Every structure is written in C-alpha cells, then in structure tokens.
Image (cartoon, rainbow, N blue to C red):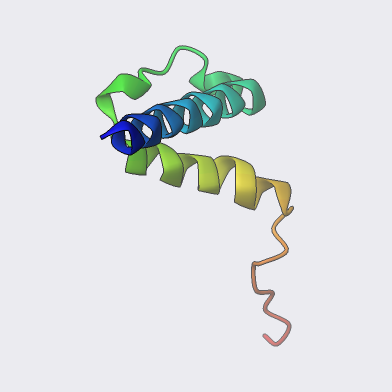
Length: 66
C-alpha cells in the first residue's frame, strides 16, 4: 500500500512540474485552468509544447518536389 501512495505522489509532482514548464515557456497558459484536465491530457500538452517544441521542428517532413 505504501508503494501506491508513493506512486501517486510522484505522479502529482510530475504533473505540477509539467504545468510549471508549460506556463514558463508559453505565457499564454499562465492563467489556464489545468485542473479540468486529466494527467494524460497534461502529459500530451507537455509533449507537444515542450518536448517537440524544443526539437525545433526537426521531426517534420519537408516537401522538396512540387
């Protein structure tokens, strides 16, 4: 049972860290209400805005032939 409590605490800390990084990197989200969204949705937002955003679009394909 102690392991479940520890796991929930880690998940909560991860969520808070992701929200903090989203707000710092994208000021438009500074007043956004994240409490209405699940951990999974916050994780998706984090991946789109922070992880993929830091790659600088390197994973996008470029059309070279017209």
